[in-house]
View 1 (cartoon, rainbow, N blue to C red):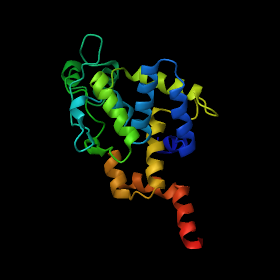
View 2 (cartoon, rainbow, N blue to C red):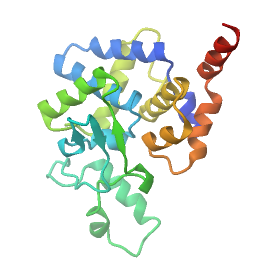
View 3 (cartoon, rainbow, N blue to C red):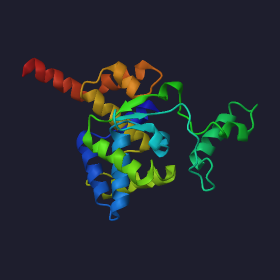
View 4 (spheres, helix red, strand yellow):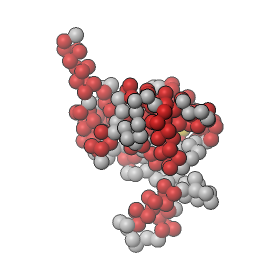
Length: 224
């Protein structure tokens, strides 16, 4: 899975093309929504399930911090209950813990993938992201749509972007895009692990080790 995510990571130039693709969507609100979630996924590195469950309660505007909680009741389903994403996650959990009933498990959703995923993610370092988060909260109180809609938004932006297609990245690939971006700009393994909510520091080191931009920067410092 880690290798697949890295392979789906976009370069900085490709990511900017993707944002331009989002700007080409005819519907202004859909265009802004798409650009917002692309920035949150491709620069903050949130998991797709985290993106779809962003709520106003997660956002501290004064600190410019997005806080992923240990649990947040999902009301995004058609009946005001848990959404399809959460229901599927609960069913997967039951495969490993069949002593519990579905109704008992679904009460805990939404929740992050691991304990390490409960974290604070700063976003004030990029005003494009700050504006995008403010817009989502002001307009909708959080991300208003489903996981499947999030996937369609990405596909549409890819289709409208120059020299990109729908095979070039994925929702999880956006997370790899963000990790590669920060590793390439010199973020150390510890802060990278904290930002992305990885349980294993080796995952952060893995991104740092394979990033060519760091090598190019080091060569420039030596030979410049």
